[in-house]
Structures are given as structure tokens and as C-alpha cells.
Length: 577
Ligand code: ADP
Ligand code: MG
Image 1 (cartoon, protein in one colour):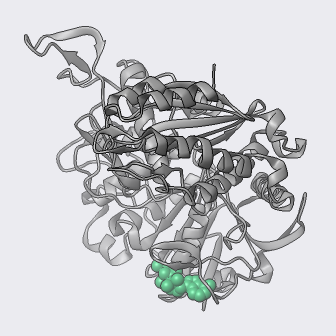
Image 2: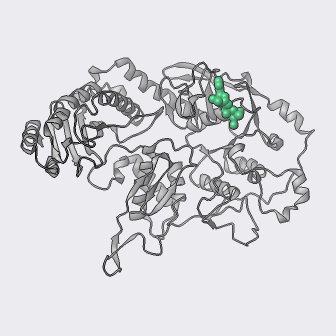
């Protein structure tokens, strides 16, 4: 490794040269208390900024043992530090001047959820922070003095302020770690207590606005109905009380605008931990919970949807169903089966975003359209078996159909943003509003195992550009282009993730992009099933982090770990394999 002095000398020697001379800076340099790595240098001042990282050894950072003792605490600490570093860096970005992206220092701006990000990783060796710097130039002429300011004046302040325990608020560090331990405790407690979710008393569920995930001010605090109130002893916070949502089928009802969807959304995001002050710190859901909605037009490949759909007029085999353009009901049927394959123990559904004909069929309609003319066995007729035979609970927001009262184990009414347990009342009324019980075919576990294959027309093989011949054994280098949170393109294929509502961060989408690329280039072989591939990638991600999927020798900042559920969802929506 070179010294920082040597970097300084190099900088001075390339000043005023043309931009590509910056390339010579690639390498590692020892600074006082940390190592600076220039991992990738941009080609010109208008291109994507250069990738830079710093490594602070554990001995220098000197965090107390409690903060670095296991994956959970290290994740909480990484998130905390990423936020501290961003605060520091934001003061210095564009202080250095020049053309294009000159002087930009860009780091991840974390949201309300705590995610594992490549922007900042804590291991027992130390802290690695990854970010991007726009190497300064005037026109295309290097302005090395400005880069010297960034690397020798600004960054050292940011690094020592953010990554050295003695410069941080010790109480805040401790609070972040203890919160994560309490949240983890609740999540682990759920199963033993027979619950799928917990919403603490005093939680703040609504958000400031449709475009802000900050808590709403002056909202009605959450208050559990007495009958559903449970209490837990958290390792740090002590006693906490709140509403426990039991396993089984839970219905959330209530008049329009009374807070049903707000509760469901909080439960959806309860698979993640939230930062202190969010209002949803103690809204905790089973980590495998899957929100599902109707997704017209999606791609489906080889899914056994016969549990819900049979005898289609076009005689398609629904035990191995494929389509380029799903209907609302087939998309939801496939979503459930894929969710089962991904190991989800809870499904979250909102009637408003579900396909009506997938959810229920009322008595009148059954009378008019006889069952042998109707290919769909609605979710209403399957939910109970899904729980009793496959152990999968359902939380369903229902605003219009009363049929679900008949199968619900728990009924919660949202009344002016306050939950009321109306299970008894609803059950008593069921007798007066009978549903004509459809006789569905017996429940059996789905049998599909999609085998991922390479595109037949050679899209994943590189072609010789003159002869057009496929170059054997030389995989095509696919490019990933991330389009915000909503999806990405892999080569020429768009992967649409708009309706994957528990995918919450562009960095997760970016991670799915490199993971799918890895799968296409290295794993899909016409033999492995989709779940073989998903499980392999999940294991590697958990063991080695997202750098496992890095293309070169390093991974830049800008990637956050998705959940296994979203990895499955992404593979399932890839049309080319
Ligand atoms: P529903 O799904 O029952 O129609 P929503 O959950 O969409 O109702 O909530 C309607 C509105 O009320 C939203 O604008 C939401 O932000 C607001 N809201 C939800 N919960 C609360 C609360 N606890 N306090 C204040 N406002 C709330
Ligand atoms: Mg609603």
C-alpha cells in the first residue's frame, strides 16, 4: 500500500493534464487512522462519478464490544454509521468545484428502515464505507488541487467524525443497538406467542404524506383493544404492550378512511426494523410476510395454480401454467403459489388492490353461473385450508365483502383510527347472513418447480459480431440499468417490480439487478429450479454479503439487501428464462 504522501505527490504531478491521467490514482493509500481506496476512476467529468471507499480498522474505530458482537448489532451499527457519514459528507459535497460532477461526494441517504447496505459495512475487522466522488476538472483538464481538498481536507474530517466511537454520541450508539435487539426479540417472540404481528400501543402508523415516509404529526396514536393486548418483556426497554395479531385468518374491516390501509401498510413494512423516532419502531411483523396484489400483465412461468384455477376455456394446464400477460386473478393465484415456495408464513391482502373474482364469489353469482362454468376457486374458499394445512396465515383488509366474516378467526374494526375487536359480534351475525358454501376440490400442496432455462435464441451467449456465430462458453456480458425502485433492465429485458410493495429502496432494486445478472450468467443451466437458484443466492448473500455478486474485485456503495421474498419475486418476473 502506498502512503498518503505518495498520493499527494501523484496528484500534484497530474494537475492540468487531460482527464484520463486520473486513472493512475487507482489503488490504496494509508491515511492517518484509515485506508483510502480509489477503486474505480471515471472516464470524464460528466460520467458516473468515481468509486471510493475507506476502511477504518476496528482497533481505531474502537467501538465497545456490545455494538459489534453479532450480525444484528453490527447491522444496527452499520446503519447508524451510514447516517452519521451521510450527515458529514452532505456538508462537503460540491465544495470542491469544476465542470460536470466535479466535487460531488455522494453517499447513500438512508430512509426510515434499517437495511444492510454496501454503503457502510461493519465486520469484526473494521468499518468499510463506500461512496462516489466526482473527480474535479475544468472542462476536461484535471483540477487536482480540488481533489486534494476532498481527499486531504474534507474526507479526513468526515471519516474521523463518523467512524470513531469517541467522536460519536455514545448514548445514541447504544440506543440504536438496543433498539435493534428489542425489535429482534419481538420478532422472535411472535411465533412462540402464536402471533404473526405486533403493533405497540402508542405507535404512530400514518405518514406525513403520500411522498414522505416521516411520521404524521398530531395523529391518533395506536391503542390495542383490550382483548388483543399482549405484553412482552424486552431485553432493554422493559415491558411493552400492544396488539398481537394471532395466527390464522384476520380480517381488518371498517368504514372508508378509518385507517385500514394505513394499518396494513405498517404491517407490510414491519418485516423491516425502523429507526428511532419513526413511530413504527415496535410494529413488528413475521419477517416472511408477503404483501400481494393483483398484477395484470405480469409474466408467469410454470406455476401450479390449480389450487385456484382449473378447466380454463382454452384448456391450458393450470398445474403448470405460463402466460406472458396474466389476468388479475391468475396473477394473484401465481403470487400465492410463488409466495408459498418462497417460504412465506403470512399473506397480506387488501381487497382494494385484489382481483375481485379471485377473492370471492357471492351466492347469487354462484346460482347464475354454475360452478362447472367457473374456473376460479376463490381465495375465500382456500384461505382456511392454507392455514390449517400449509400453516400460512392471512391478514386481509376488506371494505365491501362480508363473506370473509365466515372464515375469519379474528375481526378487527378500524374505527376513527382505533382498532376494535369485533370478532364475537361478527361471528354472531354470521348465522343471519349465510353464504352458500362452495364445495372446492380438496386442498393439495402445489407441485410446480420452475426450471430456469437460458433463452433459446442465444440472448445469454455472446455472438461474434462479424459472423453472427454464437461464441461457445463465453457468456454475454449483460448490463444492469436500474430504473429507480420500480425495476431494472437486464440487457434488453425489463424486470418490472412496481407491484412488489415490500421492496422499499432503489438500492434493493439495484441489488436484485446484480443478483439476477449473476443468476443468468452463472446459475441458470436448464437443470436448476428457480428455488435452487434463489436459495443458493440467499445463502451466499447472508454469508458473504452483496459483494459476492460484484462483478470485479470490489463492490461499490449503492446496494442494499433485499429479503428472500423479493429475490423470489424478481426471479419469477424475469421473462427471458
Ligand atoms: P382506509 O383504508 O380505511 O380507507 P386509510 O388507511 O387510507 O383508510 O386512511 C385514511 C387517511 O387517514 C389517510 O390519509 C391516513 O394518512 C389518515 N390516517 C390513518 N391513520 C391515522 C391516524 N392514526 N391518525 C391520523 N390520521 C390517520
Ligand atoms: Mg384503504
